[in-house]
Image (cartoon, rainbow, N blue to C red; front, side):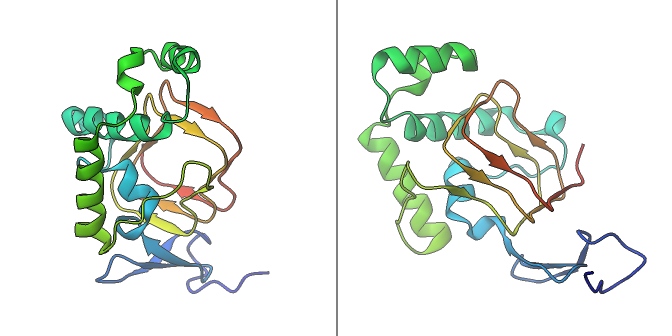
Length: 181
């Protein structure tokens, strides 16, 4: 049995939001701010959404984020596999082309600016978004997500969408809370 900070609220309810973006859930789980998670930074190279609901999201930002993500995530695919994934995502194979050197420079610059380093996650690592607090909509529409994805014990204050996404591995949501629509 978990001791709740506020017995009138559910276990995953955020009871404290700190100035640095971290938070405390009612069940005592400490949450890191999404803005400091390297996986989230990689998913939002062109910028974070500023709204809670997917239907109000900035589509231009979403398209650019999707390009960066898919270019990175599909880098190891050959042309045939890239075409198969593109078809499943309802995109052209060019949308999944490996990142250009200019795009890689942009990613490194964003990592440096947001995290203070340029250590970009490796493609074969678990996509670890566990114990994370997401303050705005997270759009993973038409994204290729390969390998294990861990959202365990995370809290989404906004929408989380995977429309037309390809998830090629296990996706864990145990003890997560999605408040958004």
